[in-house]
Length: 579
Ligand code: ATP
Ligand code: MG
Image 1 (tube, rainbow, N blue to C red):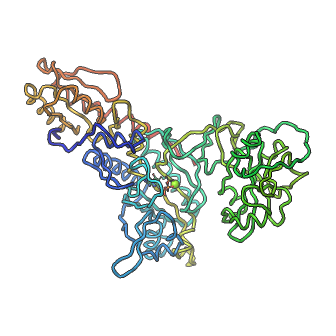
Image 2 (tube, helix red, strand yellow):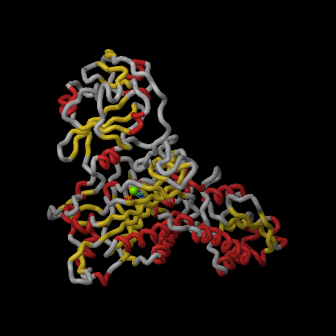
Image 3 (cartoon, rainbow, N blue to C red):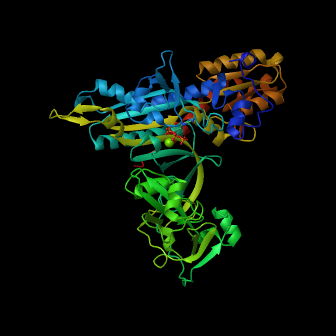
């Protein structure tokens, strides 16, 4: 491709709203443009990268035994009513001309389960693994980072169907490796973490996190074993016992208008870790439950729900809180509460003489102790894990990092098949519910994650596997050396190296800057020594330069391409199932 003909609208200035480096660079280098909040167009260079990522995803999913299909983006709402998911907040809803309700697909469990329930009759047709690479729509409350969190994005979604848990486990292991291999072929550093299943449902799930400081997800990694989990999911180990203390007498103090932990700690000049945070919940069954965590901690609602045997929990209404505590919201404490179960985070066993709300307006209470002033009905691991907490698997300490979720794999079980009546006849002719797995990978998000993790001060830095072109040929004096460069260009293409030939009448400095910004991995410079039959070759982001004979340049570039690909493939081949 000749640069002079290429549609590569680079920018000097990028919109101030683009905070992430990946967002800025993808705009600046002319890879994409914004149409609306969370909605982006892919321009030719960006589109080439997206297509190459999709091709790798396809290759790897085929290798894992998947069969590709393509499902519609437009769904009748009734299908989503069957699983109760038509009420999910991010789903786009619309009506057709006949006032029929439709939704835009945010994922495709319902649609694929509908197909399978219609077509699969016998255990002989299972297991089955079906996937697609398709546009998804989600009305995200906070679109962010360009295509990292878009409202329209390209996703790979794969679904597996089984007659036994063992068969699901086997496919899950294959997909665990499949996603790892994809990310390694994209040159990405990632961490697989145990994850919460969210609105998709199911029990076991893992996320593939691209570790970058700008990541929205908090993950915790043990400093001495392989335990790694999303903070939403992360369990916490026992930890060391707290220091012994002498119980002091209880004291009521006035705290007019001070409701939040921050307001109370400021006013009373006590540290937040001396406070008890009292959070009042209602379960789906109408039970009132009081959750206690240390003042400097956050309660993890998923943990609370699990500790209550899988109950649905939601923060109680002000009326319920007032009825239980006898005080307005903001002054609750665990002492003297009647008719509610008290469930406390294990950490509150360490220490005492706590400060909490007094269960009366504008007052707090000092020096309350478990056993003497309040009792706990159930102890549990209830708080959101943070760096410094103990590992739940060994005596190590958890370290906190940030990540962008690139992929998510779930063992769904029968949640969707049971709700939608997807069954098969077993070998004895008895009807059984199909067991399912689901696997999702963000294709466009992965492109942004690469830009986020691999860019440098000069611009983007694509791995050879997905670069828009494998080589960029910079002809510094087109008038003199244009013919020679055009010939090399043809040779490169013939040798299987795709090339962007910078034939523009621009200064050398401009060409170098643009080449670095666009981030094509192999840079070939036809400069002064072209007359002596020599060109310069280097890899973007690496310092070594090499002078090579013009006559060998295409072969050398092809060999370099193979070597760079082999580095990535080697890393992919080293991926092992971690489950
Ligand atoms: P997140 O927690 O980031 O919102 P999710 O848990 O909702 O993601 P899944 O439903 O598991 O995402 O979707 C599978 C994959 O699709 C994710 O791992 C991610 O790579 C991608 N993805 C999800 N939402 C978006 C989005 N709004 N924009 C771009 N990619 C997305
Ligand atoms: Mg997820």
